[in-house]
Length: 458
Ligand SMILES: NC(=O)c1ccc[n+]([C@@H]2O[C@H](COP(=O)([O-])OP(=O)(O)OC[C@H]3O[C@@H](n4cnc5c(N)ncnc54)[C@H](O)[C@@H]3O)[C@@H](O)[C@H]2O)c1
Image (cartoon, rainbow, N blue to C red; front, side, top):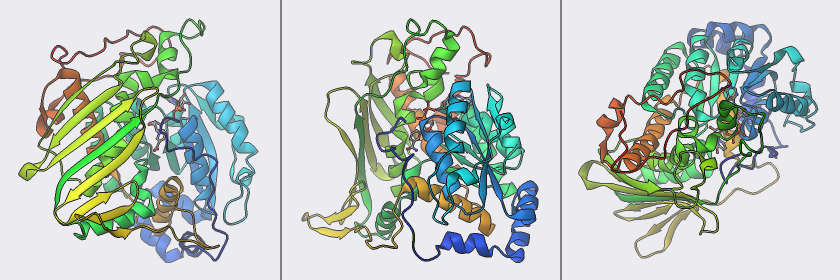
């Protein structure tokens, strides 16, 4: 896992009470609603759902997040089956499949996960093309590989008419982001669900807070600032420690440290902060960004070509400014927080409260208590909402904001790398394509660490 907030794989909903809305939707999905869905959903899924109601789930990317997300997908609906998985690496795919087959976690309908898993060896796919086999064999696909591969996979899933959950970010460069944008537009037309892994948007407490901000409780927004200052993340070993790895394998195993794979930590991790700020602004786009950044701690070549800190200044219409900072450094102060300043007060997004300018709290989210209260687990909520939307025939499509928020991060990264101010329109003009010439195991050139004022980006 790469985010500090994601120790979610073992979490399960605690709802043991009366039938939930989801349960109601799932068990009462009437012929009428399925027929209505047929006009908007991919024909394949509707035909299948109409036959026996079971939605088949596939997972691509069997690492930390994928393991959690696949579990959450199987917990989200009573009538789903995890039928296929894929990973670039055999060890990853097989480890996940073995665990899933014996997972005894019980869903809220009293069924153990292992009874919702049907993963024979022939549906455990390995290699760069594994995703195609997974997509072809399921109705709803979960994408949780390193970010670089998301555009190809999203495109293919839409082409094949499949619903999806797509982890964030959804691209690491602009040409690929454009492909995601086009695919999401197509998904909208085909009535396919596209739920984004920008998970904070699914936390009920934040939804409540955001509603009040949007209702004007702190007045007009005049400024925003956000922070993702954390420690270091995993490193899975050097080439000297793993002489059996080719350079491609080395980079893919250690994808965090290679811009083409992760987009750098500003795109991979700080995107959460930028997305929360975008949500506050109802996805208004900035006029420009001016950023700085570099690497001070992670200078060893094992840390590839990414930076370890960024500082960004986004300028919006009417002089509205947003400052954002992110840092991944050992032994430094931790801070993950987002703040909004309004004409009548301020908001603390992570702590879910609003204050007036005297400092008095004017609204605070209080977590509901009681035996039948469903835990507000944003990772579970995403899947609950995804499956409920499919059952209801009103598929969610988060395409627009997942593309825009990915762009906020990419444009800030490119501004820091080049040392140049970048407008929103200029950002979309970038033709820099970070993909390697071929997806195959073998040699791969290393890119130099960008130097502001010297590095140019097409
Ligand atoms: N929403 C969140 O809070 C959150 C938290 C953690 C991670 N993530 C995101 O989830 C994604 C995965 O992160 P992770 O921590 O699970 O990483 P991970 O390295 O643990 O897992 C990634 C998996 O994808 C596989 N993979 C890579 N390229 C592939 C390809 N072309 N085809 C098939 N499989 C491939 C890898 O072998 C690995 O098993 C990233 O995009 C990350 O940003 C999101």
